[in-house]
Image (cartoon, rainbow, N blue to C red):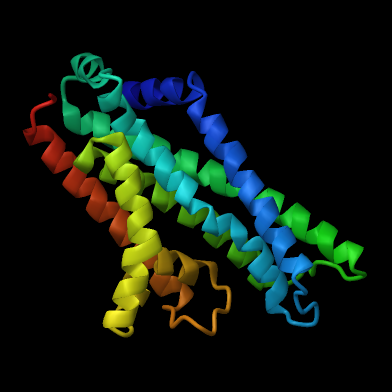
Amino acid sequence: MTGIKNEFLKLRTVRSPLLVLAAAQLVVLAGVSGLFVNGADLGDPATPLRAVGHAGLVSIFSLVLGIVGIAGEYRHRTITDTYLGTPRRGRVITAKLAVYAAAGAVLGLVSSLVAFGATALWLSGKGSSLDLSDPALWRTLAGCVIWNACFGAIGVGLGALIRNLVGAVAAALAWIALVEGIVGQLVGGFDRWLPFNSGLALEGVPAPAVDLLPRWGGGLVLAAYALLFAVVAVSTTVRRDVS
């Protein structure tokens, strides 16, 4: 519990989480607005889901936040003090995984509220309304929160493995922007099992151009990735030298 309290204290006393949170909301607003400005089909029941689904797409920010949570300590050389305060490194990494998964969930929740509000306003301005009785809407919003939480934990695992802040962020963005797309072109159907597409599946937003897993499958695969990165991060951090 002490390790978790310490990590929450660090999270509250630096500006980077707030900057990441604010940047994510700007992206959500831009994405929702862009969808309606470009003539979204208001008669398509999937349109509101695509709009609020932008709250899941900003899981990239949760990923970066998780990376910064540990790789940033190596960059600023505060990781030694952290390990001296809690000599069992496994507990440190476990605490970071829990805290940044929670931070990702908070980012996802805030982003979902912003996406929900922006979508409702755009629909109202166009003479339509958001169907609050549609269970698919709430499942999509819940999927966005879970996606962000899992990516927060994956970010901690990736940051613990690479340890170089710039390198870890670059590797994460390159994977999402390039590798997942290339794998999909080279090995048809395999890309549905990769992290970002698993998150898309968890949202449950129809995507005709992408062959996604069912929602429950996407959730299980994404959770498996988070667990895998957590196990590898803890096991390697315990054995590696700090410097």
